[in-house]
Amino acid sequence: RTLRGQPPSYTAPAPASGTAVPRVASLDARMAALDVSSSRPKAFISGRFTGATGAQIEMEWMRQMLEPRGITVLPSESPDGIDRWDDIAQGIDDCHVFVIFGTRNYGENTGNPICSFNEFKMAKQERKKIAWINMNGGKTDFSKLKGQATIKMGLTGTIYKMWEQNDELVEWVANMAIEAFKYEKNCALCSTIPC
Image (tube, rainbow, N blue to C red; front, side, top):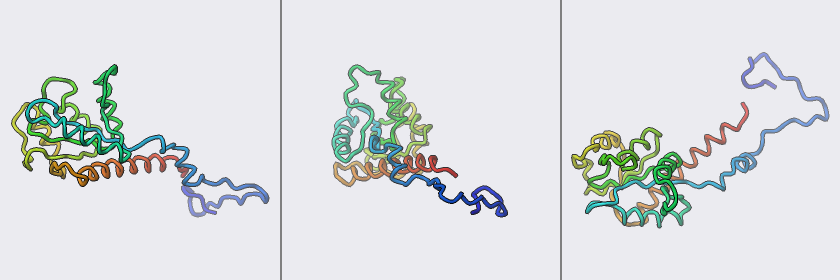
């Protein structure tokens, strides 16, 4: 038997008769060890709540549609009694897909540390998969509010879907979260395999 990582001329000694040969745990055992059943794909929803161009109603609808599909939606729906800044930062860190409700005023740097501008910057720094829902009539140019040039630059090359309240849009977001979740779990699984 030639061992991986050894020169081809090296041969491992055969196990003594009657000695059990250690086996690599089965895929099911390794998956159980990771306890993937206790975690679910996560989507972070980012958008503007205020003003005539806010997306709060659409964001709440998306949450209600994703959760029955097994997607955990972040940030917390009811932040009472928790630090909202920590909740948002942890949500972005934990999510598998960062969902942008791209209204005309999305990404404005309002000076609030938890505005959509800062959420987007963190998601890009963390290399999160982006699901851009275009709520700007198909235009990829935002208004010229402070900070939006950063958003425009960060979305270059990102494929978007137009906002429509339908299952196709929900499935698109859910599938992006599931695929990123699977990728993360596969990477974790690979790190448990001895070489």
